[in-house]
Length: 296
Image (cartoon, rainbow, N blue to C red):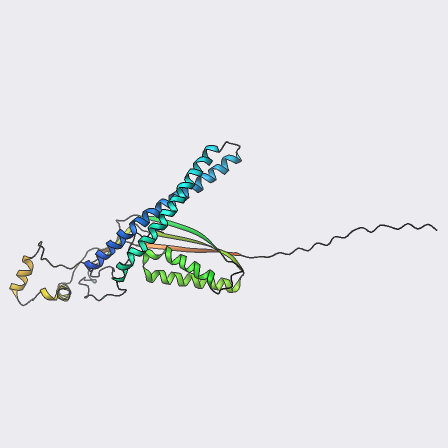
């Protein structure tokens, strides 16, 4: 699943945003871009290969020559193998390049109180983004010869975590734990031969915005002074405020960045468990015995 939506828990609606964090997220997105493009290419070729194979089977059932379709399917198969190799290389390279940036993004942050006047501001949903949907399906076989406890559940949990990782590490961990717990519950009550996992991630066109966006002046001055202690606004000094106002639209300007809107996403994880049933049928062959003749 492409990871084109870098996530940071500090990016909450109405919060102050650190420019450094935004730059790190941009670098993470740039590092993941080659792997995302390679995965999109791979998924497109997989879809084309399956479509051609299904078309060939339908035509064969109608008695129509499928030699041209089969030839194109073979060609797509070769391109698919090459795309899979390129995706593997790009994915490994992206993981290695992203790790240094993630180390610089702590899970918690310390920032000043938001200057937004939430009592007077309103939250509205406006269609400013775009709807998207990505689906992935994977079957995991539960090998009866593998007696390691929790192997089947942990593999599914890792797969689920990777699918929803675009929504943040915390959400991915929660989803993975829920999936692992659900699979373990099924394994305890049933003999599972395998599990089909269906994952769907979506982005929604309706963005959440603060409109009207009203700031509290006193809270704004406090947040500015907390963020820039070397250039504090002194409300009792007209000279200080004039100096700060004169820096507007210059390279020395200092400003607060506030998140006034956010796009939303959702996900769906479904699992179909295949039960293992063993049927034993016994046959008994009864032969005919020859009849003996008796003559007195």
